[in-house]
Image (cartoon, rainbow, N blue to C red; front, side):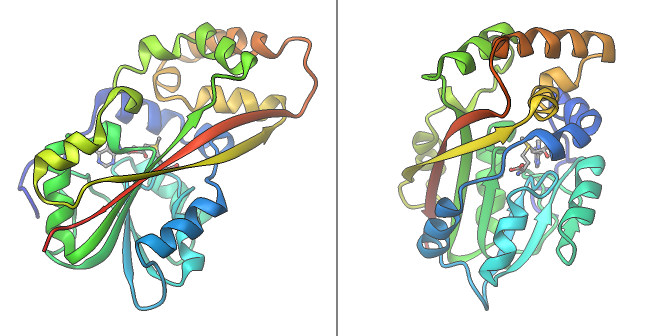
Length: 256
Ligand SMILES: C[S@@+](CC[C@H](N)C(=O)[O-])C[C@H]1O[C@@H](n2cnc3c(N)ncnc32)[C@H](O)[C@@H]1O
């Protein structure tokens, strides 16, 4: 299907997301409803439309697409993540596949959403595959929840776990508008930002740390050491911990 390439994902994604799927489901944030409503309007999600949630993981974003009334299909390469999705969001068709080899026919969906995942893709290949499965004029949306480091304990926690050092494929350093423009397949990328707050107890914040792919990929003893170190950022603070995010929403349409 698609490019005909053997589906393959980054080693850290494969190891981290399979070992950490439980922590991911428990510890990762959802997305602001305001952003979903905004997107539903911008990319016309609703009854009679078919949307592909690509790299759907445990279904955190997929679950928010279902109430729009659109028909939702999910694609996810890591079996453990897809299994969590099947049990947490029943009624959605979950297919195994990658962004570089999407297991859907040409021109078969009206929209594609990618939440917290495009930075794992081979961008030129993925953009071509997404254009292949989109109907003429169909839409692509990419979202990221970015931890708000203007809050002191969040910046301290990121320093302690050396997030910037290890998160080398960080979405923050990529010019997504340029990547989309280089493909020549889409209209110029637009962007909007929303606020989101994740309210976590101590165990929830530990799971939030365990769900970070490069931490999840570590052997257990080492992983727990990093988690304990990260948790020292909230020493002296009382539960619940409010982890703030800026949710970045990008969207564009396939050129006809
Ligand atoms: C951070 S999770 C995001 C999951 C979900 N979209 C969410 O918002 O919670 C990243 C997901 O991308 C998937 N992934 C990594 N590389 C991929 C690729 N090349 N094609 C498709 N999915 C990929 C991982 O398996 C993982 O489930």
